[in-house]
Image (cartoon, rainbow, N blue to C red; front, side, top):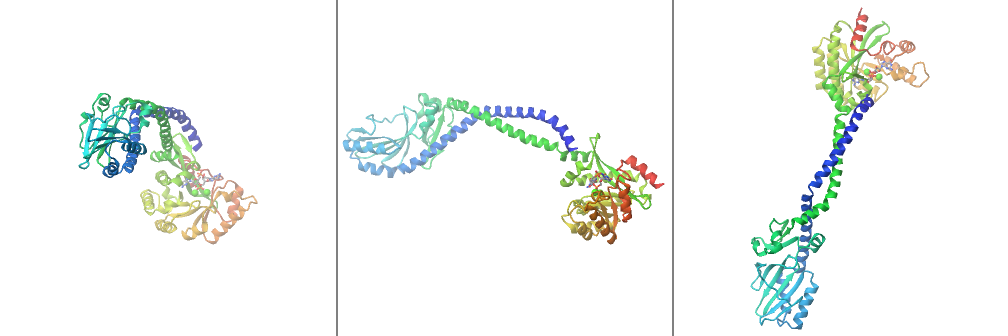
Length: 519
Ligand code: C2E
Ligand code: CA
Ligand code: CA
């Protein structure tokens, strides 16, 4: 069934799913590229933040605190703008990456500079930031050429003043890559919100929108980066192909997850679950014959799946999974309920026939569940002593003591437990001993060996010998020929089940068989 089902489901599936995959990939790819403006903003702010932080870190370690920085410098200046002063400030500016320019203005109106002879104008574009001590103050100035805010330190003494202009904070890398004058870095203090000071020409438009990043440094300065929307558009266009690709890949991952989910939904597991809810599991009955009397000893209930009420599925296709996943518990409940209703209708309790139902160890270890099962049996018109459970030794018990106590409870109710598939699995002898079992079913595997010289025939003989010695009731299953039946009978196994007598029958057929047998 699994393969049959799979072909049915997968055929329908793969065409739909390929289409779904393409749609999801395209939608995700488009969504991602639609958000390119947002990602551009994120990318730019993160770049600006990193650069600003790096620069500020270096700046702080190189310049240190302003007072200690300026002190030795002032000491070395003669305030005469002579060649010694000139050389000194040129060297200082040259050697320090963060110093752009140093100006000296003497009290007798002399002026000299490390860079050019232009006198620095502190005009409307300059902002007084703070006074650091009686000689020292910090200013921020917008630089005319690139509109970056730069820091200026002014030391004013009796002999004149020294003005140190630092390099602007923001790296040229960003500006040069995309556009000129599209990033404006403004240094201010937290309480200085008077932007008017900066507002001139191009800078005016940049300052219209809020800064893209704002960083507050330990010395109280605030660095804000204003960005031209044009720049964001350029970066956003740059990012579009990459985002389209990432969106596509993520779309594909989403598709894979969805596919996994849907496949699971359509998997055997969910189909069985659906089958349980719809009560699609029905009992078939295979007679067990007492060959001595040629009468029916009882029957084994074998489950069939009436899938979608269209297809009859044999247990080999779903029982192994149902047992592994635990779904067998619910299947058995459905099966038991139907069995009890159907066999009650045959007036079963007036016969001495046994109904054998297959259970897995897990079910036998759950006393609470077994109590419910017993209640269900008691409520029906079938007598508990007419019920037997077959417990397969293909699977192991996890708690043999629990199982033993449940089996004792069942016995007390009159319900017998048989060891199924004896000799094929985990521990026939230990189970018989520990669980105190009195019946065993000899698996078809051994019955098949009758008439051959296979060594398994010795196993069959040994099982029979053991069963006899232990005084156990033995049922041979899978009896297909007269030769097998005779051999078993000669060896004392007179309870037999197999195609030689009857295949598993659906209720209508079994009911005829039963009525015939009861005559
Ligand atoms: P099993 O308990 O050993 O049941 C006997 C299986 O042998 C049945 O197969 C039966 O149809 C088949 N059989 C009986 N006589 C002959 C024969 O002469 N020749 C051949 N070739 N086969 C014969 P089925 O019904 O297909 O069930 C297969 C297995 O599925 C069962 O083996 C049992 O282990 C499991 N099973 C069936 N119903 C249930 C159930 O309700 N609960 C659980 N846990 N397992 C079940
Ligand atoms: Ca069985
Ligand atoms: Ca078997």
